[in-house]
Image (cartoon, rainbow, N blue to C red; front, side, top):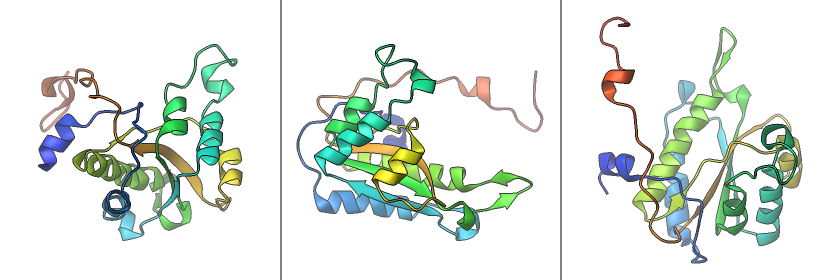
Length: 186
């Protein structure tokens, strides 16, 4: 699939079939993330690949954060079910000590964000679906997966074959609404 076509047609997928992800496709997705650019090429990202159903179910539970969603039953994290049911969950982490820190700006979030976009575009190009999940209990998730405390968990990515055809994406703003040339135009 052409890169621009992958960018234009990628969709967030929250419903997955039970078809397993072939090891070669999983490796391709992870390799695409590995190839992303990063601050001073320090490559601060780390990934935990989870396929165990019980662990994925617990990850799903930890993606409900009351401070964000309100009391249980109020409204659910729409990706919770995807985390439990996708064949694979990739947990993206960062080592802030291996990324830039300039004037108080830590760049590990940008580093992992770029790797995550590579991951999602590669998944789409290989016929897989994914979605970024950014709400979770970081401390409990880190303990569950034995992630060293100096690392930060940045996002969760359920990964698998989409169940059915993903819906068309939401509309995007026009370029004239977001782009300014030479100087900011009011």
